[in-house]
Structure formats: structure tokens, C-alpha cells
Image 1 (cartoon, rainbow, N blue to C red):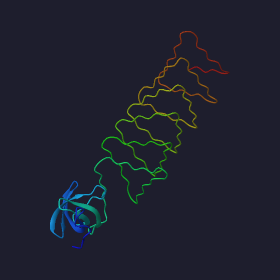
Image 2: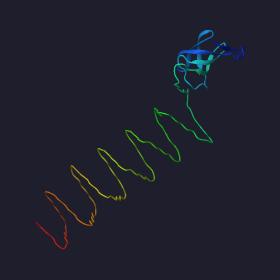
Image 3: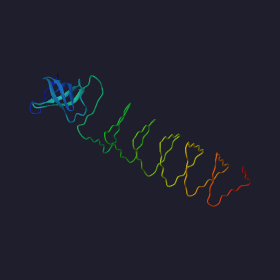
Image 4: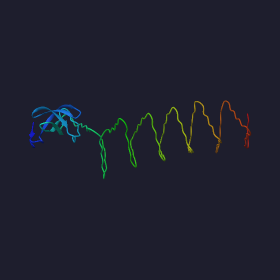
Length: 214
């Protein structure tokens, strides 16, 4: 092992070593004096793996892993933080770019706070046991929409729909309750039923040039 003596006083000396294994922030390394225990330095964010060639600082009382110099086995890297982490760019941007997958995992809660959020994807899948969405206004544009639900409750102050064609099939019962019900048909109104009942408390009016009954 190569050894570089910096200061043999209280600062100790630095040398290279090979990681044998470890857990948490404590590792066993093989250096010039054999196998020894070394603690991962606070500023060393890359988690060491067995076989890594590392730079360590040794004193009479303790040893620390300062950096990982080489990883012969692979190029995979894991960043480990002993506590809370905050990334901040006060005057610039922060970008995360991945050639394959980007995964964000949180055991409790994930938050996004921004003046504007933009998302672009060829396919988006969202699963949630319970979802709550609120806002001032919603604008949605889709070429095709498919919605499947066991039950749907819709509470709206005013509902306006403009459709080119509407085809609806109800397998059970369709019921409407309203104070007034108005229909304006430009051309033809056709109602077919096995049985039909029209009940009014006062007047029933049918007006047309020709009326065929039976």
C-alpha cells in the first residue's frame, strides 16, 4: 500500500486502503498496518463497498475514510446522508437527468411547491388509495377519455355540455328529479317503450299539425 506522511502529530497521516466490508458508517479496511476500523467522514457522501480503494486518514485514536478513489467491481454509486439534507441553488437551477429511470421514494410524504409545474410523458400511471384535488380552475383537453368507477357523485352549481353525438346505455334505472325539465329538439323526437305512463296534476298539452294516436 502506498503511504503519504502528512504530519505525524495530532493530524496523523493519510494512506490508501481497501474496504473489506462494513455497516452504517463504520467499515473495516486493509491498509499498510493490516486490517483496521475506519469511520466514514461526514463529507464523504458516496457509500463504500467491499473492494473499493479508499483514501483514509489515520491518527493514534481513530481513522476516517476521506474519499473513494477506485471501484474495480462496478461503476454504481450510492449517496448516503447521516441526517436531513437540503439542496439549494440561490441564483441558479437544479436539474436531475437520468438516461433510464428516475425514482423518488419517501416513507412518509413528498411535496412539490412551485409557481408552475409542468409534466410531459408518453404514458402516465397514477395510483392512490385516496386522492383530493382542489383549485381555482381546470382546463382539460383529450382525444379520448375512458373512465371506470363503481360510484360517482357530482355536485355542480351549473353544468353546460356541448356534444356532437351522445350515446348512452343504462342497464338499470335512470332517474331524474328537477324543478323544471325542458327539451328543445330541432328535428325528430322518438321515444320507444314497452309501457309508457305520463302523469300530470293539471294539464297535458300536445300541439302539432298532425297527431296520430294508436
